[in-house]
Image: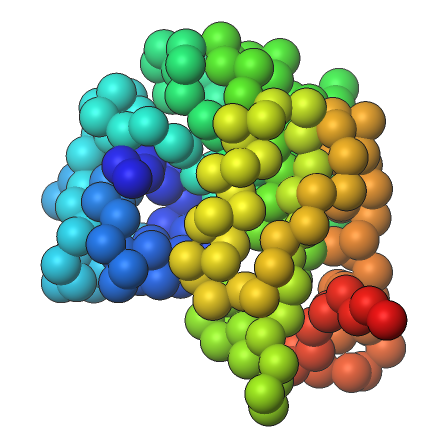
Length: 205
């Protein structure tokens, strides 16, 4: 799959490496191709960098992993996203988000042509994306969104990143629940002193 990643920090950079390692073609969308955070990612085969609109144009799927307050502006910078899947991995934390929107995914939908927008890769730390394995078990991932193509793509990419399963928790009306779930992990890890090496697994019997 041809994937554009906008936001080359911890989450975007980690997923770029994981996905490139299993054969996906990664195009980092940046404002300056000669100087950006995560330039070391270009040393890995399968990863290149382009200006944001060019990266989007060359890709089938877009991952957004920038700071939440600029979600609307970043969505506007993508250019024509018609027919492309967008995965939102961002969260509004402690009220810091795009003005006028209750979730980052709603801000994206309001500022892009694509209706295939889902929320995924937002409910755990990047450390768990680097290594989702806890003993003999791998953590699970979760996705929300009305888009069937977006949900199918997110589930496959979660498995490609090493997660055991990726469960759909519902449609666009569950975007806020996904962000609350992220806050639940942040609260446990940071504010309740559990540390970042914790994660979630859906068990059945």
